[in-house]
Image 1 (cartoon, helix red, strand yellow):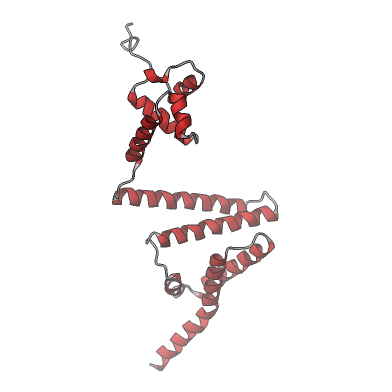
Image 2 (tube, rainbow, N blue to C red):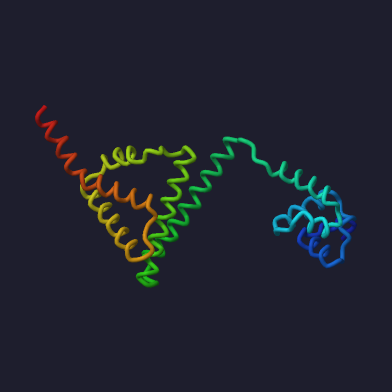
Length: 212
């Protein structure tokens, strides 16, 4: 059976080409322009200087600078709302996956108490870091305490007690291990204070309604 692809040139993997150049088995001046660009980009990724790239590829430093400029233009980001939403969605999904994985480690039967505590703490660090990033990106309001108050207002007593106990546990674990960053300490402290005051606030609202 005749094979139509037997006479077609086989494309070499870029890493193989680069290795052959470094080993002196391939003359880089014989490469097409697109392959030269890819080689320069790969060498930059390895941390090679312009001088080193010029030596490896047998090009002038001026030519390498032109290649690098072209690579930067090709890789430049342009404002695109669709890309922005896709990137943020992917970031949140990855953070949630990491959080869930760490939480499973913290609640698993295997591992020491110290390892479980570290996993629990790391999980909260991920949530805190994500929240800060979303705030700085404009996806969450910077005045977290306002949202926090509105959020806690809808908690019933059982949920409030459960969340309060969870915060106390996290603070205790943090004291026994590596501690918490100050912003996260402040967030937990403010949330705990709001939770402790919530029953009084709800009772006050109830008295006002009864008087009316």
